[in-house]
Image 1 (cartoon, rainbow, N blue to C red):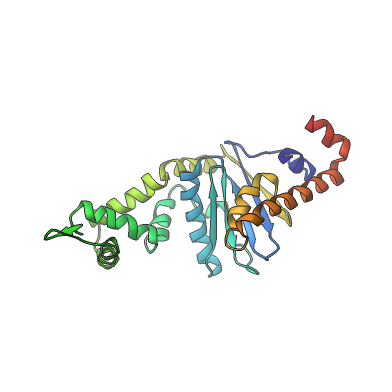
Image 2 (image 1 turned 135 degrees about the horizontal axis):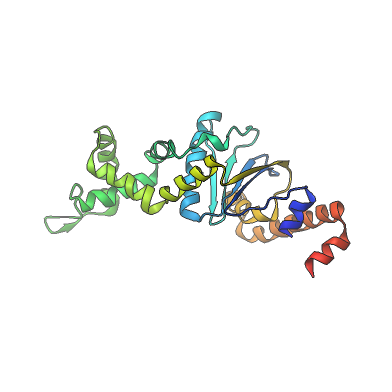
Amino acid sequence: EEYLFLKSMGIKDYPSDKVLLIENYVDEYGRHYVIFHSLHGRRTNDALSRAYAYVASRKVGRNVGIAVTDHGFALIFPPNVKPKINVSDVTSDNIDSILREAVKNTELMQRRFRHVAVRSLMILRNYKGHEIKVSKQQLSARTLLQVCLNIPDFPVVKETFREILEDFMDIRHAKEVLRRIERGDIKVVVLPENDVPSPFSHNIVLLGLSDVVLMEDKRLVLERLHEIIMARISKSIGQAVISRHLR
């Protein structure tokens, strides 16, 4: 089904470790998805998606959401906002600085900073025999972080960034993917805008719909997308070809 749909669009290159396929899809709520079929694992895709989303957000002046899986990610633009993003906006040279800017004011940064600060004894878990509540630790971490971010090369901040970029994400592999794109070892194929996502994208799109579609309705959305896909394929290449491929 996945390959038949792309074939019906005249696409000969399919997602792989040597092909980055990018879809442009507008859902029924008017949100524009730019879907990267990046088969490089969740941690690598997490790094890439956050970097591209940060750049896109700066370009359009609005928050850009993300949906991440092991096999790709989507940038989700608000309704009636035209996407502004190019693959070349994020490079192996600038992804590190982009990600640091992207995560430094997030809940993820605050949580990780608290863990590192506790290990560094900047924040105490216990004081005079009394356990300090996690909520109080987090409040202390939030205050300390704002101060420490203004201190160049502060060790606890450096370790927090390292944990996020190297342990939580996989920036090393992300840089290698970008280098391969820059060398031409990974081919970039951009599909024209469509009102239906390819079957490769269904799981990513469902993740992006989590805030507007109830869990029990996701199955119905998936069934509806499948019906639309099969109708498009049938119209384009014929039922006989479909039957032959599905045997």
